[in-house]
Image 1 (cartoon, rainbow, N blue to C red):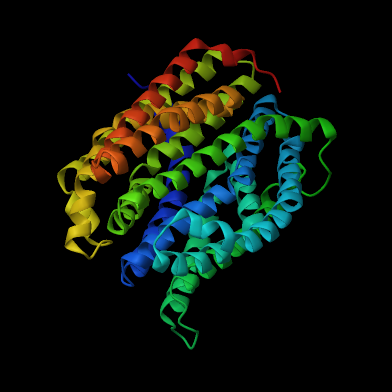
Image 2: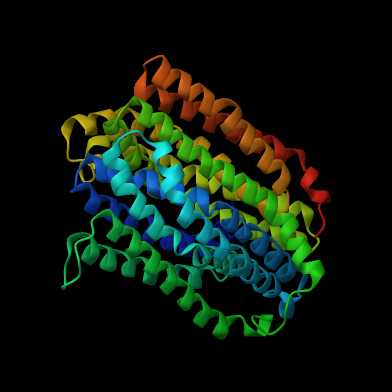
Length: 441
């Protein structure tokens, strides 16, 4: 049984993260619902453009894991005046790498984007959306660094506050630019991309203001990180960045595979994944909480406590995600009807959403223990397992089962469910093996 005090500690850290992530993904769904009124081509374009943006920025997003792991370890060690030095390093790397990345992808996009999708209508809608999103690449990276820091030092409420502000701005700006309200031009999908990029910049400014108030004592913008700190940050972040890149590339490849089946299936998949990301948020948030709790315990030289936090967070997440999965199984059409307006497209998404609901307890195992392993510095083995499961098994199987054998979206989602089951089992084995206890940084 899970001790009530430990459950309270987990929830006090995880609930603000859940709240912030819910605000983020619900507002992303609002964007999807707004664009969905423009038709399947626009909906498919935003889906492809969004995941391509995720892939393009994935290497920078990996900085969050290194910042969180180092900040949590320093907090556990009692070195509070050094907690924000990894954040300073992450922000520096974000600027040095983000600006050239933005310039390169802006000019390269017209050459590689049409290769990903055959439908000219989707390309015409998706390319301006993607280019607008890419303008905020450095700010996306900085936001992830701030997220890692505040979660690592158990100040997740500040993270939630920023996301609420950022994503309210996202909806307001996107709505005006998609439909041409308040005298602004009617830009359609490009307006949605500009709205998301603008809100990301607003989020970064909000984070800076909060960090000046709550992290100056920890060294925020007071000292440059040492070469040793930067080395540790990169050693922890690079495997996670590579994993995130491959994961994001895999999502883009998944969209490419589904695009070989049809545009309606691609539109349905966009809604499925966005809806799924909202409904599994408790697991993602608790994984971040597990990373902080286990990392802080190791900083205090309490290895058995770190092991126990991983299992305890997993128990709580399994109960929560099991409950979250029930609506996906019982009322899939109700959940889908607000986003898909074509009856035939909606029916394509029903069984895949029920499959997602059926594996939610297993998803809890994978999400929590992946987060915990990254929080204790075992980023390299997590990277290897994630890449092999996704690229070595899932994507080849999805291509064969979906477009080649003709089982369509349902066949692809059966492969997806089996892939997530295998991934969860692998992370359970890694955590139970305890080899991560010997990692020092």
